[in-house]
Image 1 (cartoon, rainbow, N blue to C red):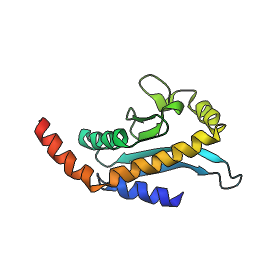
Image 2: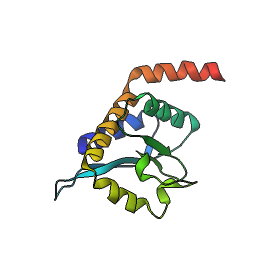
Image 3: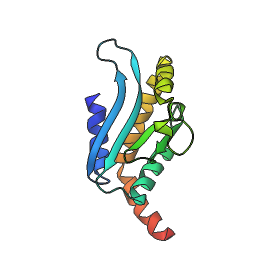
Length: 141
């Protein structure tokens, strides 16, 4: 998992200084089963532009499962929609842990979601995203 952690840290740091980062997923170190992947982070200075760039990267990456970004709390979260609840604070809903445990029973889902997370981070790293985001955003203002 450290390879994906390094990729996430380097990729998100291109958008701004990180205060905190957590990459969940991969294989369980003791039992070997696949865990549900998700990415949590906090920028030193969060902004709407950073969020737009992340949303664009997520939206333009072909994925095998549905993903959502939750910015309702101090730490932002990119997670499969399957494990998030509804409402204003989807990651903090009481059943979050239950949904994660349930999703972990579907090992194929965990593998597909892990590949998705890797692909989304690689999309966010692509220089064309940086070039295109500057021109699109200036033109929209």
